[in-house]
Length: 339
Image 1 (cartoon, rainbow, N blue to C red):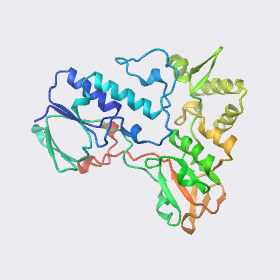
Image 2 (spheres, rainbow, N blue to C red):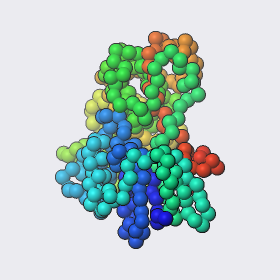
Image 3 (tube, rainbow, N blue to C red):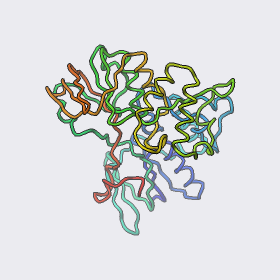
Image 4 (tube, helix red, strand yellow):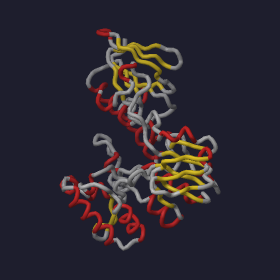
């Protein structure tokens, strides 16, 4: 009988395992379905760059230098950091890779029974979930009508080679959606981005501060972020316009479309300028929400009356369902954050 099983070896799972060991639990095992640490980051699209700076991304008990605090890690750099963290604190030896959990069953006071895809059964007094929310892709209802075009979710997307010289629709303008739209627009014959409402507030990873260029999340302290949404929105817009850069100007135009009374905080932000660059430099066109599908997806209509013709492929960056597939039936549709 193990003291605790941690499911997931992303950054959260690594920290959880380390803390359990330091609290004196000797029989701790971390289960990871992939072959390496890093969780969804390790298996994301090739060009992924974190939207939090190195300063914000590093753990306070494993600082690796002061020279890169304003840099943003690629996914490979992030995974390398987490692996070094796991090695340093003796976590790596506790991880069982290629161990996909397919079911967990509560055994009352006896703890938990964990079944692996391999058929192995493990017993543990405690269970810690560190799987995150990015496991089960979410799609709009019309996805099932796409019978004559290729379609992909950002979870399986790796690079834009799949749409070379094709007409492609990218759905969603969040962090991943913006990055993917930029990649698609560089090689596609035509690229559209469908936004249900708007992108969320588009903000730069870095900005000028005096004579220096600094990471936005380092430069803006908590006092600034605690300002009312309308005040913060006005300050950010003024700062963007003062850059006198066409990419910042394009971001300002996108941000003007945000609906709601609370300015910056009305919806999630997008902390990169990929979408403004796609629009400005690569002819990417922003369209409205898709409301009608014809010809198996070859023709798509938006809520604003736009008609997209000769569509070859659709890439969904539409997030994930708040569910964990291996939980007991009564908990499968529960938001993991509420457990």
